[in-house]
Image (cartoon, rainbow, N blue to C red; front, side, top):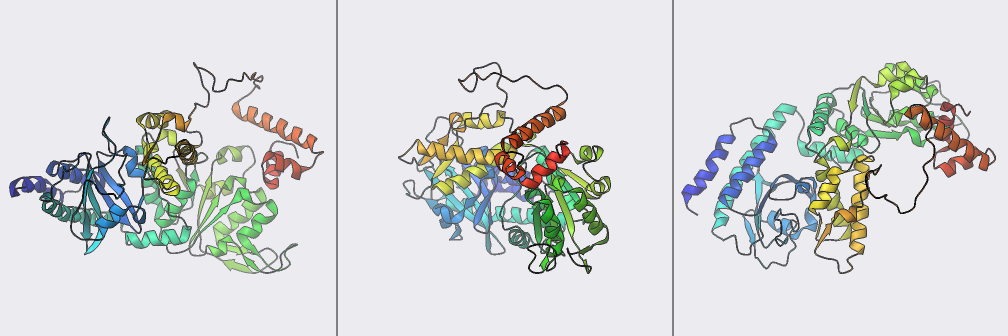
Length: 517
């Protein structure tokens, strides 16, 4: 390749270095220029995050690739690229599996990659990530093009350096790697908020806005939308990120233990209290306390929590001694607490203290093509778990995911991908190199099928519909179900709770709300 075409391809990127561009647009231009310089079927820019490679931009690859996270130790080609500072071209007949097999957007073509080369991006003399090029045609890349790729990689490294410095100045945050390490240590998980839809970007802006403050945040949203992940992101974005993030699921505890879990207890405070114990507030001192399912807290506990939030002082059960704590509170619920306040089931003063900064997490059905990115994340998890070379979605399966309403949101998608991958693999005992999930494998059915054949061949008569609004109808059905269950068990609440799949304390609270106790 002569110097003139190389210079022509690189000059626009040099100009971009001085422009204030969104990172996504900057990286898109980078890959576009690279494909113009080195024709190929697909290109990708990946950032190295610990032992994982995270795709930042792709061109010519399936949309779900952006949601995948590639563990370097599981992909020999990535290992090889990162092991040497210069570009590497793999022979067309290389036996090393290609991470992009099945992901190249080439309708009707062989989906296995046959020519591949890549180069590490070095920032401050350390590997920052990779640029990769893939072709479905054997022998498409020549050794002469490695020099051009090296020149391109050097400019790409300058591009990502500029992008990172702009982000650093804008957010005034600590070093990204240090924040990620603190986040993993505090949460014990390595998850992230994945998405590019306007609704998701708005959520991330809200997280960045309020994350650095000490304001109490009330996270609302449907079941399965990822409220706990949002709480972790808020903690990570705060100045308390190097302090503990302590979580408590308020719906998982009986009423008698909620106070002990929150405030701690001393020896002899109640039967079974054989020693002194610190509560969640003291464990979270200096950091963040996350109360999940906060709508399930009893009224008596709400009053005591309100005092702690206002004064920063608490007493352990059975003790008169005051303990001072400095805790930032984040709460989450899928219930309409304002409606609960109006109905008398929730304290108004506690609700207003919780909702200093309300933060709504959008349901998956409002996030458009984010479903494909999230699917890619779960596909890569299951590919690794099942020991597959490639796990992908057919175009029809992608269309089915986009058309579905997702009543269970992201959690439902995660379970669906795991279940479908396992079932599809069971139908292929020969373990194919590329396992493709079809729309049939996903088995997605609308919640209320209309204008078509019923989802089940059995004709079940529909019960007469109750009168009133949805809340009244739901309450009526729950009341009848609990009464029938109690009748079967002779009034034994513990046995009824087991049959209904509820914690006894939760059943007791529900029964009080429904007027059964």
